Image: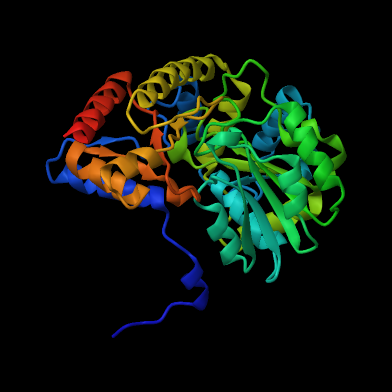
Length: 394
């Protein structure tokens, strides 16, 4: 007997990056030596002082429910972080702690969007944005920005795309999947286009804030555009910068009425984030940041190697990024040279013939590209490039 699912599920896809991870894991279990460049997960251990804080929390019996919106200690650490690093001042009631930054984004979509609303998303985009909009009943609309314009939308593009139906504008900088990061001046120019549309809320997804190596310091949207602070929700978390993906702690700060609504939704879904993980996140945000700098230096070294190596492959063109741990080469010439129909076919070919797992660019709204994660050892990257070249030359 086949049981029907809800109509909304016709608009929702499984996570493409999760599918790649599952496929690579299954092939490894079958005995294949797969190098996975598909997953956005740091390959470093969580720093020792953060693990120690979690162990202390367990010994101290901090194993019970916390307030749904987060412990007072963690919310205060988040408040200090925003003030210290972003020059943004929030009250505790303007902050919510979630089970990963993804939940913060999901909660915002459910708290803000209604059927008929439009969500404006620059493409390439992180795979989950359109599906979150769809679950909330809204329509995802895209502004395309390819490698020719450094994967950044222009103020003119944004102004042309905004309309009275636009309810949410999503900005991820540094960007997954491209590594592109907007400068403060570029953010201010986008802000001027948004000034004329007071119904639009801005979601600044800053999860890769600290994995950043451009000469100009990172700028968060709300700090670059203070006139839009009262309609900007800034989402972040500890997963990427502190190698804490499995700890599942994200957070968001913004207008109190939206944050309250997000916490209400959370009260009917997951309730509070893990109490032990919250204690560890306090140590992450307030503690020694040396490990963050060390991990970022390693990512930057791998980035430099991989971008140069990809540009050395016939038919590949890769832009240097300013952050994250992804490279996003354009492979359309390579597809044409090999008679391949799509980036999906190329990714399948590399998995089967080179034992290298990547993610097709079409999953990010960018056909003709593919994403490679360099959150792995330099040795793995070098071997992956050898395998890719060998497979493509065969």
